[in-house]
Image (tube, rainbow, N blue to C red):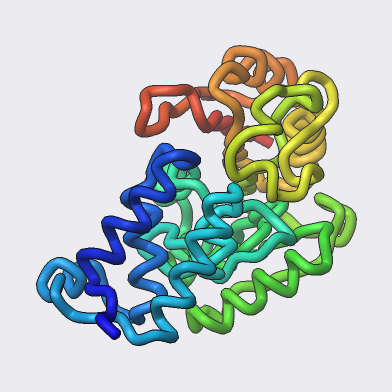
Amino acid sequence: MTRTTIAEALQWASSVLSATSESAHVDAEVLLLHCLGKNRSFIYAWPERQLTDEQHKQLQQMVARRAQGVPVAHIVGEREFWSLPFIVNESTLIPRPDTEILVETALNLPLAENAAVLDLGTGTGAIALALAHERPQWQVCAVDNVGAAVELAKANRKNLALPQVEILKSDWFSELAGRKFQLIASNPPYIEENDEHLAQGDVRFEPRSALTAGQQGFAALFHIAEHAREFLLPGAYLLLEHGFTQGRRLREKLNELGYLQVATVRDFGSNERCTLGFWPG
């Protein structure tokens, strides 16, 4: 029996997924590479290599799941963020490339070499662990209210060999009494509860509690902005990711709460994505 070559498998998977995915070829590549256990250059250097029967069967099963809308990250159990591999599952959000803007902004702040940094609603731990990877001397603490997310973040901490990162179960600031930070960063839920996009794409498979918030999506953002003042050192920063239409209202709120130097940073698509405020104390 003739076995399927890498080139044929890639073409088949791309064709099947083209009906349901806007990134069919990329999805097909990721799934095929996962089955082969190889890097991207391999499939183009050796297109005539044949898949084993087991690899072919696995690819068919994975493509079928993706065709049903299951996120690629959930199928392969991993997503790259800040060039680091993160284990992912259904307990929390899949890290998005746009959140790298928040990490980049944080790294450019004039913080002390051993700055105390807090990541609220850490999920996979992507923000906290990316920051700790770049600034090993920072004292990074990450919290989440979902136990399964806390365990996932701890698994990623171990996998990335960043034992210095503290990971706690906390409902926002509830377990942090008396602590102070030079930077509080968060990518909280900020989608309106009736947003039509919640029925589309990968978000269908992600926990609604990690996506949506009341007050037209501002509830968590406003809660963090208000209460963060108790946990920020004088001269510290608050950095929040938000929806692309929420920048103006969030800037107004931060100014109302006494933050200074309030500014919004745009993402790779030139959309307003993160807003920063300086806390004078």
